[in-house]
Image (cartoon, rainbow, N blue to C red; front, side, top):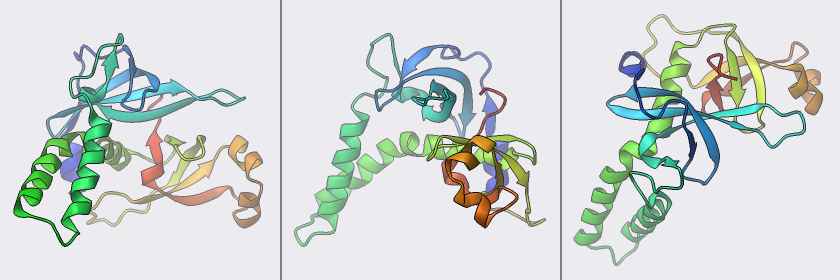
Length: 202
């Protein structure tokens, strides 16, 4: 699975989105730094300024169909409303009054949203799968940076990497001094769901 995802991910060098200043589906301004084809879905790698005293940049991914350019609506509008509708349908399916029509609507909505829901996760996992010790990492939850300390993959690994050992930057360690008390070398194991390789972009 992991190898298949990584091998099916390629950089789209001629994407018209490259270098564009856009707005993501949450209304946040960002810049498209790279575009990847992941299983046939074009997903943008975005950077944006962090609202922090020390500055810095965030990095994330989003399906290009959810990006707005120059105030124009995205190719797939109303994404957040459709997610709310999907959640409501799922809730209905777990109620006593659920009908076959409800189930059909839920399956149809799920299939429609699936490419957009999974695009960011698939791109992140593909990039994490290709990461090596020494690569720089951005941690989304705390807006911290770090470096991959080591990778202990099983020789026959066929699942996405779900955790990595990261050596946090000094700024992160100053922000949370307890980390050094528990991990004197500043290296902690973190879930890959909260990290993006910086790829030299930030």
